Image (tube, rainbow, N blue to C red; front, side, top):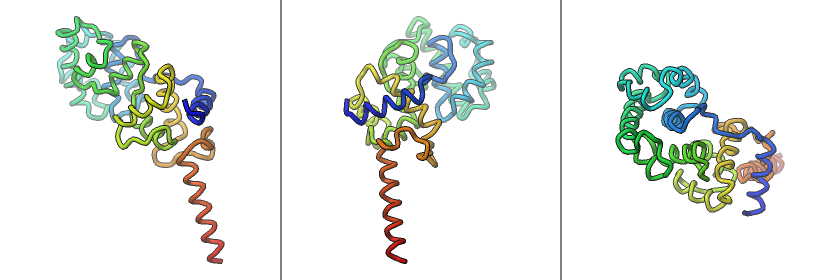
Length: 223
């Protein structure tokens, strides 16, 4: 692991000692459902919906009693709820028919399910089964490329680069650390560089410093 990468991870560990999956769940099935629901939606909003949903429908057998329309009604405050309801109901039947009602613990198995791509699979594998994985969501994509841990033009390339950059044993924790930093400091529109604990190791911050120096130099010359 590169010296800078190691320093970034250590600083993030100090800043976010409680970094973990923020989707509330009790079983691999609930985590799978929540992760599918979380696409283009905040974890907070998903948790608000699933708190009641999982009390009424805690497992696969309970979900199989729901129609697509009934599930859609229960998750309608979440973005893309109709399409998500359709995928989740289909996914439930796939679990019953193809996996004996159990959530598979492989990338191939999870991505064969409706509504589940690599990001969903990595979240479930990492948090439900303890498999080292890096789930590249919007926060991981933005922050890792902003810092300079990766330089990928899409989430697939970014995932590959992070897997090479980070030790396998650090993949899952690094994923949570980067997400926490993206949600609490390195915002999409206006990152709070002033209080960023890793700014001295960040490519984006170094670019800002250079730009500010160039502006000051230009202003000085113009005077």
